[in-house]
Each structure stands twice: as C-alpha cells, then as structure tokens.
Image 1 (cartoon, rainbow, N blue to C red):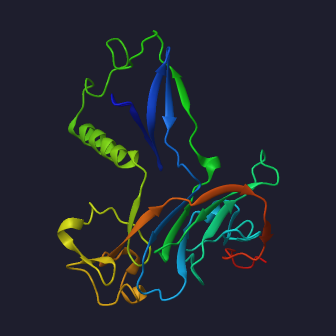
Image 2 (image 1 turned 135 degrees about the vertical axis):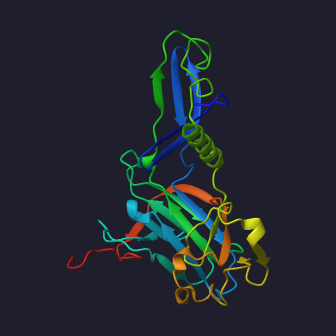
Image 3 (image 1 turned 90 degrees about the horizontal axis):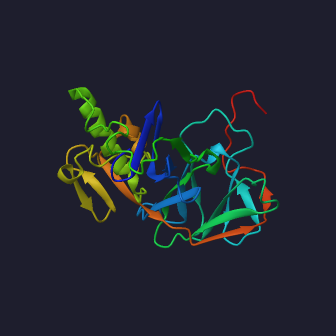
Length: 278
C-alpha cells in the first residue's frame, strides 16, 4: 500500500493492483479489473488488400462467439471443451463490416447475452483479447484495528520507508512500484512484431533503435530488420522473438453494447482438440 492510495500485491504468477480506502477500522482494497470482457486493438496493414484479420487471445477460456454486427446468428470462436492449444489463432475475414463478440450466458441473464460491437473504420489488422469476468479479482477488506483512518500514521503498520531494507529489497520495492505505475493506466497501445508477440518499448530502446516507415505503417529497427520480414515472418530465424519491425496497435472502444438473444452456429472458427479426440 502506497500513500497515494494505490496498492500492489505480487505472488507467484500473480500481480494485482488497484486503490485502497479506509472505512472506520477497515481497509478496503479495490482491484482494478478490465472495464469490458472484450478488448480490441487495431492498425492499418498495407499488406492486407481485402477484408481484415484478427488475432484472438484468451477466447478459449470461455464459450465465446463472433458475428456480423446486427446478425441474429453468431459463430463459436472455439469448439466446446477445447484443449491442446497452439499459438496460431489468426483468421482472415472478408469485407469490412462491423463485427460483434459475445460470451456465454450468465445465470442471472436467461436468454440474453451482451454483444460488443466494433467498427473496423480505417483498421484492417486486429488483436482481440477476451478477459473472463468470472476471473475478476474481488474486493478485499481487512481489519486494521485501533480506529485509525490513516494506516501510515504513528502506531499503525510500519511503512516500507521506515522498515529496514537491504539493497536487494530496495531494488525489489522500486521494481514493484514501477510495475504498478505501468499498470495503473489501461493499456491503450500494443507494440507487436509480425508474429503478434508484444514488446515493452522501453526494453528495446525504442526511441534510439527504431524509425517510423510510413509506407509500411511500422517502426523499423536500425539494426535487426530483414527485408520483407513483415510479409514472410516465417522465413526469419526465431521469428516469434524478432524485434526487426514492430507494429503499433491502438485500443478501439466498443461502438455499441446491447443485450440480445441470438442463434449459435456450432461449427467453430477454430478447433482445438488433442490427438485421438472426436
């Protein structure tokens, strides 16, 4: 807990951040969860001549659906009970119409699903992310005793500033706060290579090592780019980790969110089954 009312919890494969408040002798931790279960990021890709392309992340974690905006039928993104996944969930769609996402029924919404509609506009290359609302972090309440309204006041818990720290702990605290600062704001931009691996631009010395190429609508490395690797990334050694060219994907807000029934097209966009399963 920091004095600016932000808190950070870190554990094995877990990082939680949010804001804290004091109510009487209790501290309430309010985690920051995604505003919507579906997030979309887009860019204009000059190499896509017709239609648009979507890379899907996390859609296998629930029953998720995609369809044309306004349609009464939506297609499953994955088969029921998917397993044995790979990293190739990219699909090319014809046309340039608006599209919608939806997820499985909620028990308190019989016959209704919220559909999230997005307009392609000038974009034709997308990253779609699904975050299961059931996995959202709940509020946490702790009794601090003593009736103090300030957990940092004298007699309350010892703050990190006053606790004895060795150099290792100081470094860990600094890194934790830096991670927290990066996560305070929603990610509005992704930088990805042609294999859709995202990169922290500070880690690749972005300002010093990249120049913007207008024709490619991409940032090209001064040192690691190989000709046409954005068109044929598979030809480059270790393409998934390549930092030769990076694309900027910007967050797109839903154009509409409505609760409406629809029919399900059972044949899924992707099939993820282990060998031998029918």
